[in-house]
Image (cartoon, rainbow, N blue to C red):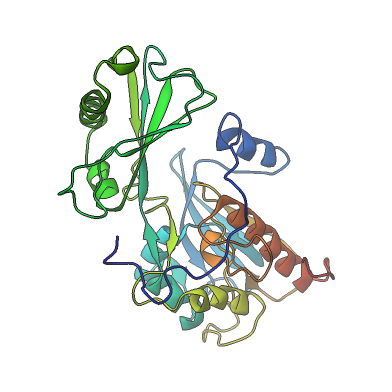
Amino acid sequence: TLETISLRHGYEGQILPGPNAEVEGGYGGLVARLAEEVDVRLGHEVTRVDGRTDKEGFRVHCLTSEGPERVFVARRVIVALPLGVLKEAISSSSFFDPPLPDLIAGPISRLEMCLMNKVELRFPRRWWPPGLAGLNIATRADDLVGDQPWSHWVVESDEAAVIVCYASGRFAERVERMPDDEAAAEATALLRLAYGEEFGGVPDPIAANVTRWRSDRHARGSWTIFNAGSRGVEDVRAFWVHNRGRGESSDDGGGMRGMFFVSLLDYACVQALHTDTHNRKHVKAGEHTCDNHVRGLDIGTVHGAFLSGGLAAEELLRDVGMVHNQTT
């Protein structure tokens, strides 16, 4: 909202030119393809990253969907957590042991996650004209700035009769608290008020889905913003300074140095990499680490998150002598 975004840093950073691209069938198929040759352990929720107990490596504690705890030990660890989850993790005295150094704990605490939710409605028929990409509805003159309900709708091009309302600002917070049926009823009433019997009238939706990213404990928000009190790109750049082993380090007895944070879409995982080196290191990535030092490394974007993961992996592999050339 206007009260939280930084006036000085709010619009720092760059973004690739051109329109947004659509992924046919949604991001799920893209993630599935990327994971085809990767050992992904679903149902493993990381509860602790311990760099003190085992001098040979980090002990990563996981609760599994089957019930018992599992512990993975590795000298190289990639931690994939969204910024919102990291903020909760650094406030806990037990998740990172030893705690993260101030060089990156500071930016994590200062940066914030914004919120955008979607209300998806499926109708028995496409009641809007063919070829329409979206619907924009004027709001009341006395609506607060940042709380403009049901004003921006996108037509799903790969679905027969689905439209999606994008909710941001205070309206997104309100949508977060609404049950699906209440959101669907309020949205439908507004559509009928706006369009009446034009296009043959608005039928009752046959299905509804509401995202609630703030309430999702594996996300805690949508993407990173430069809020009031943050240092803008300087905060983001600190992650890469730490990745490359420059700047302050924590007094951890050789343990916790440089975290690898990957926030790709809405998924989080931990992957252990065993190496022959006795050095232990963490590197980090994710949309919240995107500082534009490479073209396309754009904060708050899917392509930025994806690119940062590759760059951070190169840093890790370069550290063990497997990569020598810097990506540009």
